[in-house]
Image (tube, rainbow, N blue to C red; front, side, top):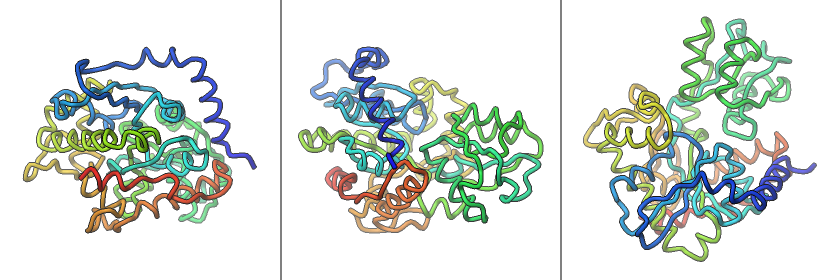
Length: 360
């Protein structure tokens, strides 16, 4: 069977080759007089705001950043594949698909972990997972929400194909939940809270703060780079990764201030940014990543290196050194189940964890 993602990526590549000039007006540059330029792409999400923190505080004065914001990750990765971007910030699960489709880019590091950011929410009349058989559930097809829903269903005795999975963006999924059009949905902040508040009797049956999700590292964001960047501009790749984590470390000690920057650049209300990534509650100059202060856990460079297996020690939350490979295998298992990949691929063709080690 032909991979679903192959047609998605190829269509995007064809479209971008014709309409590249249309996408580029959404790109905006900073620090016009810098020695080297890093072209960064992402979709709108506060967890992708740390390059903006770096830019604002001039933490990497030898770099110039150009940002492209596109809400469709497939288009972002297509731009990465055609060397119109150098770096893409996105959810982590795309790594195996990019390798399977030979998309000219690699996953280089985990950047943050869902720490209460995601819920599976069921309608008030759903008493158990078995009640969902034959009913519609909302997920973002081809995303982490798709996998989280599949895992939760099967852990609770329901095969993933015994429900009808409906592909909806989070805002539309939230509306469908409130209106009763779907019986369950995987939602992330702030849409999960909106449904729980707006639909009396609805409840969360799984949350990314639960130990199994923390230990698996499933619900995570990551940084991807083009093969051209990694192979031909290795020094710049190192600088680009260092710049990202410099932004994170500045935020850790100044998150109340830096959240305002992230809110402005990502287009999120400051209240949502505070709720999603934390609002400045500090312990020993490190932002608390507890449930009362944000729903994402930002990895340090060292923790990212441990997850990749290129530095000694264990990552947080019971994760194991080198768990990136297990994560790769977990996600691609589900992509094969869902028909987005026809067979599994080796992580060696799609991971470049050596970059984290070189950047430390």
